[in-house]
Length: 127
Image (cartoon, rainbow, N blue to C red):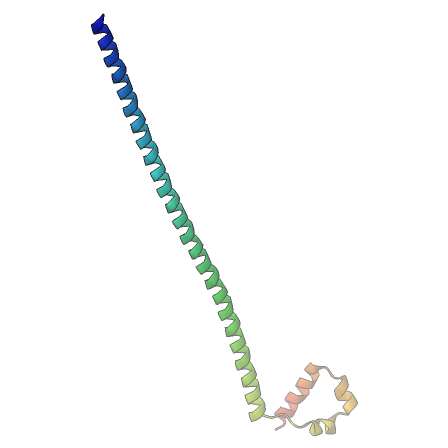
């Protein structure tokens, strides 16, 4: 009888020990899982931040590219304007008085810009 009781107590304490070890292992697994999850979340945050920085750099590059193109167009327009002004200085148009000898003021006022340019061009050819 006593042996049975001792063996039962031993088995009960053995079961409690096994249960405690299982609980500790389960707790370790939970901690390990939480640590892995925290690490994965950290990697996700870092990757997301890196992707956002890359996205912002691309947006900035695109904006700068547009600004550059705009400046290049403005520079080309300025070059054209300077060339036009240079030509006006080196090849001035005939004064209005010479046009008035060929056309009346009313005729000049009714002409389109294209017609006036043609007439002015003819005057230049007459030089």
